[in-house]
Image (tube, rainbow, N blue to C red; front, side):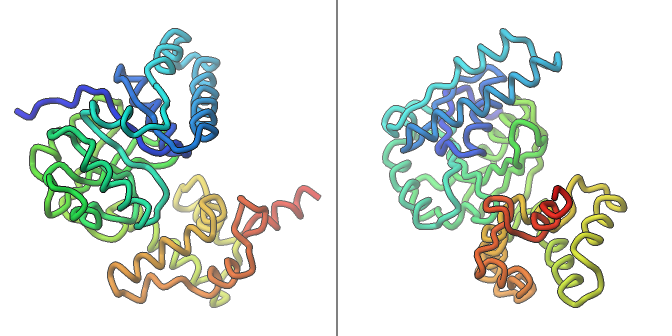
Length: 294
């Protein structure tokens, strides 16, 4: 039987995903080292996670003592030398940039313990993109949490062609140990499983509106009320960021050579005009929201 992952756990990157992943892990008794180059990001990650956990306390879903214990288990640092060498599992959550991720992975190969599992949380870049950065590729895989990580239940454990059975087993068991539901994705593919289906739906919604079959608002209403999505595809695109959605779809073209992923003009033209969604208040649905409020 594979040895369980015991910790400490290193979470690299203190953005929205990294901060919440770190505190989700800490809630289940693991010590965590949360790393970022930015002290400001680390402080924000702790503050945001404490706010989310405090809401659970207010709703009676979490004891105050458990919240405080979880917060105490997360230690923040700007030094990889402090975060990585003792870690049994290293989870990379930095920006979706190949060059930046590869640079970090090269450092991890120098610093990580021999038996440590190295996981990337990337939703679009498979671990095989980084396998030449490591001498021990058998311990490398994708461990994809969904946003917001403190809420969303699913974690995709994605096996690369280099990943060992032991690494997949240890990671899957760890996901269960932190209160999440793992699924094993046996082969790498663009978007893995859940996002692959989501990207197809987004592209179809863009096509239907672009060709004049339905309005943005009616498309969102249909998907919310017929399919049960909490957000329609256009509201979701605005939330994610239209520039991010465009980059994700373009990555699909580059990875697969399949033109069905090519960003459509209805999306690309907005990005070129600087309409990026909720992050700057100009997107598919934000203008309509503003009109309603007015």
